[in-house]
Amino acid sequence: MMFRWIGKHVDLELLAKRIEEFLANEKFKTSKEISNSKMLFLAAKKYEDIPLTILVTIKGKPDDLVVGIEPMVPESMRIFSQFLAILGLGALVLRRIKLREIYDRLEQDFLSYLEKNISDLVGSAKN
Image 1: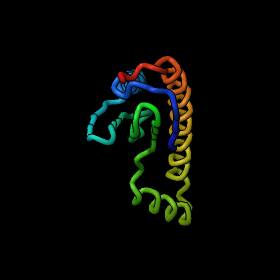
Image 2 (image 1 turned 60 degrees about the vertical axis):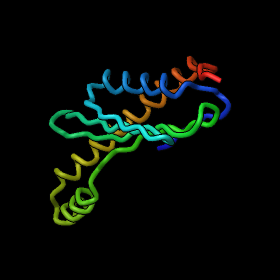
Image 3 (image 1 turned 90 degrees about the vertical axis):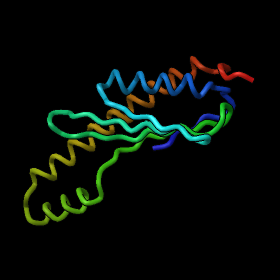
């Protein structure tokens, strides 16, 4: 899911640090990649023996900012779980539903955190 803020004049480096803090507080191990147009955070952890991986992106400029968060679920897992559901192996389907619930909760927590921190960082970008 992508979230956009316009006219906030947010320091993107400070926002990136806040996002790293959020991921660390959620016990994710992260790697960060920076290009001239965006920042990417790949974050992974285990939750009840379920591997979770998300990709967080920051792109844009201080006055027109887009932050995205998306689960990194392999396509093969999606197709395979649908196939198993047809065969009646519902345990894997239940695991996929639980994974979706975990990602949905994380996305909502992330959005709440982002909104608070962007409000705190309004006007923080250097001219």
